[in-house]
Structure formats: structure tokens, C-alpha cells
Amino acid sequence: MRSVLISLALPIVLTFGAASAEAAEDAGHIKVSNGIVQIERSGQRLPAPVGGVVQQGDLVITGADGSVGITFRDNSLLSVGPDSVLSIDRFVFDSTTHQGAFESSLKQGTLAVVSGKLAKHSQEAMKVKTPAAILGVRGTEFLVRTGPSKD
Amino acid sequence: MFAPARRKTDVSSALTRNLLRLAPLGLLVLAGCAGRDDLYVLLPGKGKTGALTVTSGGERRILDQPYAAARVPRTGSVNGRVTTEAEVRRAFGPALAAQPGRPVSFYLYFLADTDEFTLESKQVVTHIFAEIARRPAPEIVIIGHTDRVGSVQYNDALSRKRAERVREELLKLGIPKVRMSVAGRGEREPEISTADQVPEPRNRRVEISVR
Image (cartoon, rainbow over all chains, first blue to last red; front, side, top):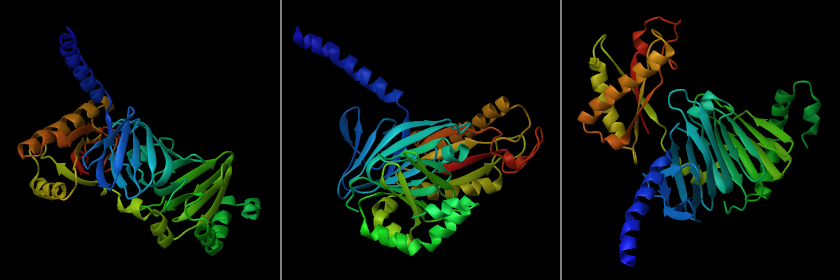
């Protein structure tokens, strides 16, 4: 009886899993991945290889020798150095109007940013937060370091 | 330390001048506290340097010169100064080294009233393939554009149709469908600015962005 229940439940779980994976639209793709890099998504730690996707809500985590470069759908380029934690709080991009929002938080470590179409369209669209400050972005390239970092 | 600059009539330019004069002092501060305080640096962009607004507590500072920097030793305190390329390399080397390649755009133009690419556009396809080949996990974004004949809504649909047509062509040439996405920008991003309802062949184009 129990095995029947399990065999009934399994396809439901699989179907649900696939549906929720599709519901979250990809925010960006990983183009560079060195050393230990992980994505924390819905409480799970996943590997972050070149070609992997980054979604709204993800935490991007690098180890002591890790670094990662991500190209977002609006052409924003974010790259993270070692011992860093970057949260992708919000990513919305309309490819026709270029309206939307890109909010991320660097919890610790180093971050290099080349802003993309969202920041070009609106000065309000892109924000990077740290535990100490909020950065507003007007079509530009910049660097952020926060929290304990071993350089 | 920067308080006097604030009393000047032209606050932003006076601030910039003072920051530049104090640059060597700022570097000493940086060297003394490396790895501790928050550090924000504006880089010279390709073409133009934009601006970064740093807000901490009630304090706000605008960085709008290349290598302008701000330190936040504690929340509500933003110290401005200027850093250098060498300092930036030292503090941000691995993050900068991991930057993805900049997206590159190619343009296809159509012969009037046909779905045929112009001869030049056929040659562009070779360059597109070369660009795809040299990138890790390449993506191809196909973006249609129109001139300003017709309504905004009509041109949104038309630009998307043009982009989808190009995707079909690239599919035939062997680019995997999963690598490609399409967008229609309508008449919002003209190559040549015109008044409304003016036909302009150079704006009837499809952009292929490889990233």
C-alpha cells in the first residue's frame, strides 16, 4: 500500500518541481566561474557552473578562491570576488520598453558592476545595497566592497 | 574633513576640486584601512562616466568623476575621496577579472519589401558565428527595430515579427534555439532620429546581440 502511495506521489512531486522551475524567469546567466561558487535557491545550495542560470531571489556565494561573472537579461554585468555573498533581490526587465527594476545586495565581499539597459532607461531602476549604504546608479561602471573581506 | 567644501556656492565642482587635491591623503587612508570599511568606486565607463549616488543613513554623496570613491566607516557617514587604477586593481582584482565579456551587436538590414537580407548582411552572419564561437555559454538576443511609420503598437508587433523571422534564419544556419531569444523594440531605438510617420530604411533593422 505504501509503495503504491509513493509511486502515485512521485510524479506529482516531479510535475510540481518542473512547474515552479519554469515559473521563475531567468534573470541572468553565469559566464565566468572560478574556484568555489554556489547559488543558494529556496534553501538549497547548488553548483554555479558556466552556463548556469541566476534567478530573482538567489544568493550568489563565493569561497576564498572563488569568483563569478554573470550577464543579466538587460546586459548588466555583475562579477563577484572571493569570500562574497550577493543577493539578487529583484530583477524585472521588459525587453520592449526597457522598464523594470534590478535590486541586489552585497552582504559581504567585492562586486564589480557594469550597468545595463535598465539603468540606462531610468535612474531609479538599478540599486545596489550594502549593510551600510544604498547605491543609486546612473548608466555607469562601479565597484563595491563591504563587510569582512580578505582582499 | 570635507566640511569647508560644502559652504562654497558651487558645491559639486568645489567638492570635486577639493577631492582631487586631497587624493594623496585619501590613498593613505585607504592603505591604512584596507579590508575594513565599505568602499565604493566609480570607474571611467566606455564612452562616458555616469554617476553613483551613495546614501548611508541621512548622508548622501554623488560620485561623478572617474575613480571618485566613497568610504563608509559607519552607517550615516560617507567620506569622499579619489582612488587610482592601481589601488582599484589591488582591492578588486578578482572581481574585475571575472567580468563577463561585453555584449556585441550586429545589424541586419532588409531589402525593401522582402524578407531578403542585403548582401552586406549576409557577410555579417559570418562575423556573428565567429563571435558566438569565442564566448563561454553564448546567448544570442535578436532585437527587431522599425521606423516611425505606423502606430507604436503596430511597430512593436512588426519589430517582433522581424526578429522572429531572423531567428528562423539563424535556426536554419545551425544556431540552437535554446541559445536564442527575441525582443521587439518597435520604434523606440532608431539609428536615425526622425519625426513620426517618416519612412527610414536604416531604422528597419534587426539587431543581433551576442553575449
